[in-house]
Length: 206
Image 1 (cartoon, rainbow, N blue to C red):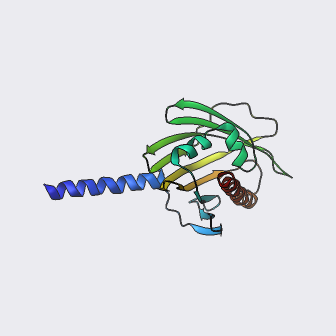
Image 2 (cartoon, helix red, strand yellow; image 1 turned 60 degrees about the horizontal axis):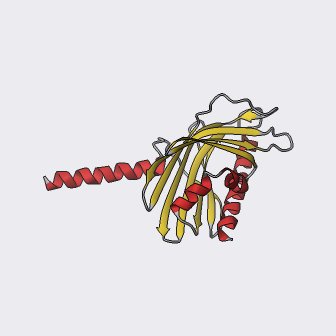
Image 3 (tube, rainbow, N blue to C red; image 1 turned 180 degrees about the vertical axis):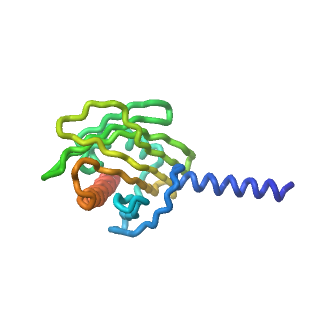
């Protein structure tokens, strides 16, 4: 009986760990480091369609889980750190869920983009928070010449390493849509993500 109980607990722990790291998404991605420094890094992986890429951002910050979560879901804060974000609208849907609409600036021959997704906290303890981000757009009137993006998946894994140190990992994949070449969209996405990490690190270092 003790053996069965132990095996059950072990299995549940594995399932919980898997859920924490994938948010329930079933992608077997081979991550390759693109760029890094002592504080943060960006990695890439090919999605199953062989065209779009997935991105992984990792950063260590001197803060706490709840503070970082509040920072993520504050409209003015998001616009400060998220590269190319001109405006953000956040609507609370439930205690653990929000609808986030982000308006990104364009540039050169790239039209402005809009992304709309739901953000749901699936795990929340003193040391771990997992946030699943899903593409669930509601009918909206897009600004002139803007293109609605498609989010394939998104997942935040936030771990409290110590009372003053937080490890944040965000994995996601999105399609820019419109007539922008895939290789251009991928290049912009990587550079924008690196810039976002730079802004995050600067904000929490101040």
